[in-house]
Amino acid sequence: MVPIPKGTVLLIEEDLRLQQYLAVTLRLAGYEARFARDAMEGFAALQTYHVDVIAINFRLPDMNCLQFLETLLLDKNYHNAKGVPVIVMTAFPIALNEKWRLYRMGVKAVFLKENGFEEMVALLQRELDTHGKVLPLHARPRPQKAQPNYLSYLEE
Image (tube, rainbow, N blue to C red):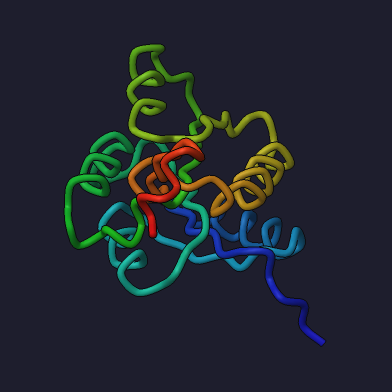
């Protein structure tokens, strides 16, 4: 019997050997994996599949991660993916100002590939455990104004 996956990860990474390695790693950890080689394939996958987490390489052949996130946030074609957690992978250190931009754009973690992919699986699990349990501000119900008991007759 095939176990139900813990969640679906969209991995946007141009290195095909790394994609294959991560496919095995993610499946062994219990995740379904969808792959894209560049940002445009990533956008197409977001319109085709439901994904729970996006793991994206910082430097892609057609655009960098910051440009991808800006498009994701501003383009109405991707409104279904606005609340999806994003984890950024990089083989090189990222400048501090770029990291701050990533975090301000909603990135949950920046992961250095040389640290090994066990850390990435742990980050994915953390995001899947918390995603959907904490609603973004725009989706939270507005609190009802509490009326003092002595005004309860107004509700009748």
